[in-house]
Length: 171
Image (cartoon, rainbow, N blue to C red; front, side, top):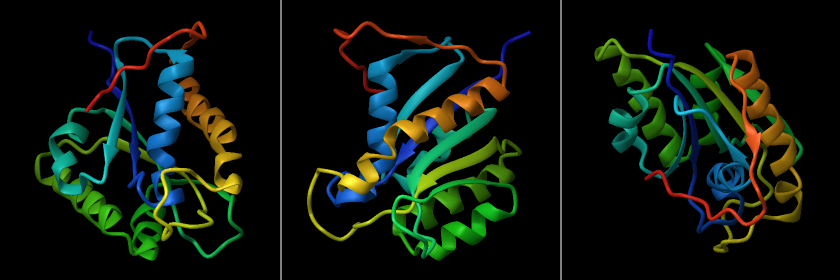
């Protein structure tokens, strides 16, 4: 029996400070860890609806993103089930709305991955900069830990990479 495909998908625009948080987390995970063949790390950027084909391949989907929820910057979130559409709509971000539509269309394909969204409350998603704010950057390690806990929940193990690893790019 083929093992479930687990996808870790980082979304966001790296050109707007903390908006690129999800992509930066996936990049760090790729630098630091190796995963079994049934786990993929994907830089989804702001592809939104164009991710439909990619996410429909997953059995379990772990999305990492910046989530505006009007809380203290740096607050961490874990969303699943009915909480996902509500919180995504609260963000009012174009890539998030497209992402929600892509997830909804997966239902039409009868291929909806079990989805969890792990995110951080951004400090600044309007300033043009490829650098994360210090508040958000300090949440990369705790967010990686949350993603690793999700993998553990699915029975997935990983290994730390050597420090001289050159990361790969999924998309």
